[in-house]
Image 1 (cartoon, one colour):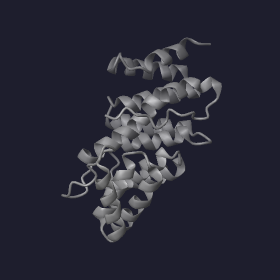
Image 2 (cartoon, helix red, strand yellow; image 1 turned 90 degrees about the horizontal axis):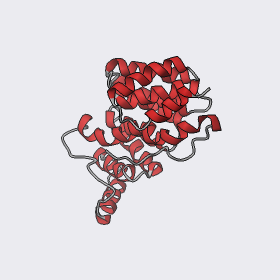
Image 3 (cartoon, one colour; image 1 turned 30 degrees about the vertical axis):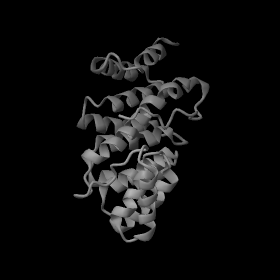
Length: 226
């Protein structure tokens, strides 16, 4: 799993929410990054091995993929492949351009829809990301990774909608009770909301699931504060 955070930059939270800024970069983005890595295995887009590129791909391969996309505007595979090149090196503006082209060619392709959500999420365009996640969840309401990212857009948007974030996290946990990133995020929302009783209960679940979770000390510190 990529451990690189898309959210470890300042999130614009108040000083009282600094804890969230400290470890949100670790696990709020964890779901997004997991979605990026799992898309190839969990969401098939056809028989062709599309999207299996890394940031270490040889430059000629990257150039050829982009040239092919320009020369074959009616090829879904060409558009998706070029988008994936940019996506995997966090060049989301360019990725969106090619994913949008791929989406026009194949509007019902699930992976393209999810990656449009993820790419906008990576650019902190949470309202736009939400629209794509909603489309994805209409197609596959049981995708816990997508639902978690969808819920997180309500936490990171301004103004925040903490109750909606909690609602989506709870739905995700109903489908997959031991989904650690979702449970972590739920703890953070309770902490942000100041609901210590709910935080205490969620934290107990998290600690039982994984006592080594790096968020636990900060969450316990919050519980012990006034």
